[in-house]
Length: 509
Image (cartoon, rainbow, N blue to C red; front, side):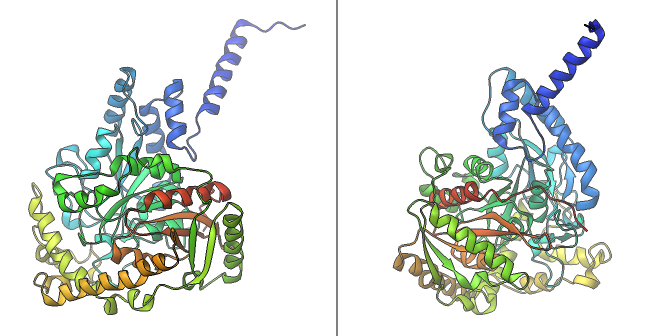
């Protein structure tokens, strides 16, 4: 019998250790729970995790243009988290890298910009972290950087791509590079899908979390308006804006939601009103495999009409509906939200009129609060674009929405009428339907339904549902009334666990 030399034995022993470590943690499709298990087992440090994501960003970002900049202090933050862990501090987001959409402010002293993708705000300095960022930091999360986005959250131009910004360029769908990744939280969705970060944050005024989640095969939670603070976030409309997670799993998204909800004195009215919806014990308790049991779910059939691959997608969704029934859900089919055609037309509903005036007021307020900034008002931004037309591709995309917003003069009778009209459409639409049919939620397959949830301030969760014959992902959106996140989480998690659709991207041309 051959005898192994001591040097060979040491090499084999080290190899076994490495193999054991690799089994303990895999970066691809890593979850918050798998990260925390690896931390606890001593197989991973926050520094190693951050370095791995930074390496992946360096490798893939030239292709995807999903990350607009990385935090120069990310490794120092990771080192601090590692030291805290040794002293006994923990928590499910402790030491976990989070990528923020580029309209979510971080304190000016940290070396990160917050620009909404525009050169106009490059070099501006926020006096404090956004409210949701303060909560993330208190939980021990590491800010990895800023995600690319549709410039100004797609509220500058009618023709600019919904995932383009002057600073970040045209972000690309990681599944099919030529396909739209949608926006405006495009970089957040792409980064989560392509494993460029552990978890990400996005924002939504109308569809900006739901749509990119749908097309990038990630889970996106659009919370009830006011559940998460909008303080320190470059705004469009305080009436509709909300901040939520985009992650690879429902469980990860819910754990992030648990951290970022709650009262904020800097967004006091909205967060105080919505804080009544936050359940004692948080949202993680609603991650139930049997979450579909007994739930009454309405199918909004007009949102299952597809412009391409329709027979295949319809077959996929019918199979999903069968699965949901088998898991105990009660499906009520062929439902319609009253006046949905009016709701989906921003001019008829009043949404366009209201958003223009709200944007000017809210943006001017945000800019005036900055410690320093090249621009101090919407008028300054318009002039900046005129002076930097090449960088901002002004001749190609223009800025008609900015010009229309600048032409408003506050919330007057016309705007109040538009807001009242949307409130009435919501009451007579989704709220009436859900009451009459005794629904826990409605489901839709296309992101067009996002407007129904947007104008009413309602929550929604998008979950991966499949991939077309062309490889482009699609999702299923669960929506409900204000404060219905617990039920939506139960249904979304039950659906996810019953179908397990999501797979990593293939980067097809």
